Image (cartoon, rainbow, N blue to C red; front, top):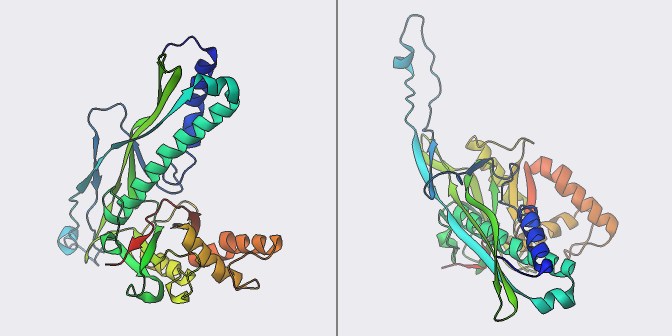
Length: 328
């Protein structure tokens, strides 16, 4: 860690100070608007969190005067649990002395912060959305790997050759566990006159099953639609009807909303474009291209206001959801 270069020492201090704010600017990182169940186990022993979950409860019965309440409506508390294991995600870069001398400290600092923080943040989001879709942090490759309730564009998977997976989710659908905050380590390689800088984080996700009389459910819906931006078949494009159906299914499961009263709709770039084409048909163009700044503002107002209120979800775009899945 020790170095005779005051520039690299200042760079290291800046990266350490700035990495966490940059890292936090992603979808699934500690963000109560997206995931409310967040746990920090950095001070404990082990790499796994055992999280208790409640069992199904029945509707309270009508009880006659002097009769047994428990006998009329037994609602035994028998909690289960899930185990969330953390994994390590990391990224590194080499910074040469010449880079500092020729590129300027501020330029190099910003480049290092951006690359390292976005790399580990993106790795976190990819693992989180894979866990949401399949229960495993391994990225799915086929639609069949997705074991949430699936809602298909056009109502049928048969014609979708390659698909993106978007989600409508409750903020309580998953838990997020962090064992190590974003950390940067540095090594001075005097032989090559350069510095090795490595950023790591240890975190993990777990889907939370909720009990119903019909069995366990997850408070998230997978929206399956074509991964093609310019999908010619409108039946294969994700639609607001698909999002609205996902919201309705969550409401039927009594899924909790966020503090703002909305669910979260996380859509891929292709699916965002499909929705934009649908919105542009309302007083705009039908090609998916925003015709003017005024139309852009109108569409954004629709998404943030009227459409969000009508559908019941706040929209977030993320290209870290499962994309390019095949159909077996």
